[in-house]
Image 1 (cartoon, one colour):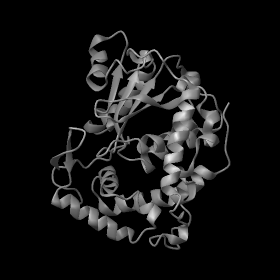
Image 2 (cartoon, rainbow, N blue to C red):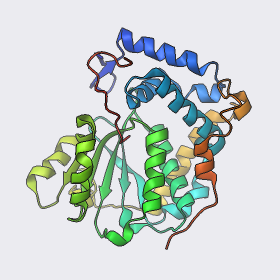
Image 3 (cartoon, rainbow, N blue to C red):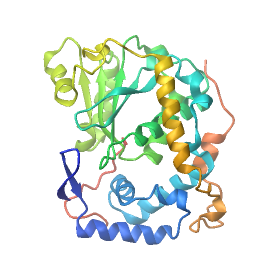
Image 4 (cartoon, one colour):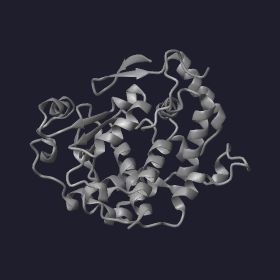
Amino acid sequence: MNPNQVTNGFVRPVPTEEEKGKIEELRKLLGPLPEKLSSFCSDDAVLRYLRARNWHVKKAAKMLKETLKWRVQYKPEEICWEEIADEAETGKIYRSSCVDKRGRPVLIMRPSVENSKSVKGQIRYLVYCMENAIQNLPPGEEQMVWMIDFNGYSLANVSLRTTRETAHVLQEHYPERLSLAILYNPPKFFEPFWKVARPFLEPKTRNKVKFVYSDDPNTKQIMEENFDMDKMESAFGGNDDSGFNIDEHSERMKEDDKKRLAALKDIASPSLDSLSFLSVSDGATSDSAHLGSEDVSEDDHQPHGMNEKKESIP
C-alpha cells in the first residue's frame, strides 16, 4: 500500500492499483445493494474483508455476503441501550472516555465481573459495544483498541460456549477491526494458552497483542507509548480516578443511539429478498440461525508481498 496523510496527523496506507482492482472485482460479485447495506461496503470495509481472506476475492466476497445477510437478520445497528442495559451494569464491557494517541476508541473489558448467564444476551451486548465503538471511530480509521483487565479473573470465569460465540462473531463479522489488544495483569494460568496459540498466528496478529503488568516498568511503557496516561483510568496505571460510572455511561450511550438512529430513520431496512447475490441455495445465513437460536445458559490471489496465512484475530 502507498502512504497517505490523514486528518489525525498519522500516515495511513491507501490501496495500490492492484488492490483497487480487487475491490472492484469483489463489488461485481456483490452486485447492487440496498442503501442501508451500501454504507457498510465502503472501500475501507471491502479492504478489511480482503485482508481477512488474504486477498482471495471470492473468499472475501463470500465472507462479506455472510456478514450482510447477518446484518439484515440480526440488525446490529438497531440495538439500543434500553435493550442491553442490564448486561452493562457491572462494566464488563464499555467504551472508555479515553482514546489512544490516534484518537481511536478503547473498549474496556473486565471478564471477572460477568453478570449474566445468557450467552445470547452477552453476545448481543458485545455486538452493541462493537457497533458503538465503530460509530466513534475518527475519520480515516477502521480499527479500535481493546483493553482487557484481568483483575479478579479466575478459571471460574471461563465459559467455553461464550468464548466460542464471541470469537465467531468477531472473526466473521468484524474482521480487521482490532488495532491493539492490551492484556492487563493476565493470570499465570493464561500464559500457557497463549504460548500454544501464538505460533499459529501471523506476525502482524501476534504483534497486536501486548501483555502489560502493573509491576513491570518495561511493559508499562507500552501504555505510555499508546495513551495519554493523564486520561487513562487508574486501574490501568493512569491518573484518572473516576472509574466506571453506569449512570454517566448510560447517558453517553443514549446520546450515541439518538445520533445513529437519526441517521438511519429515512433509510429503509433491507430484507433478504433485496440481496441480489442471495441464491435459493444460500437459504438463510447459518450465522443468523447460529445467533438467533434458543439461548443456553451456563452454570494466486494476493497482491505482491502479502502473506498467505489466514489471520485468526479480528
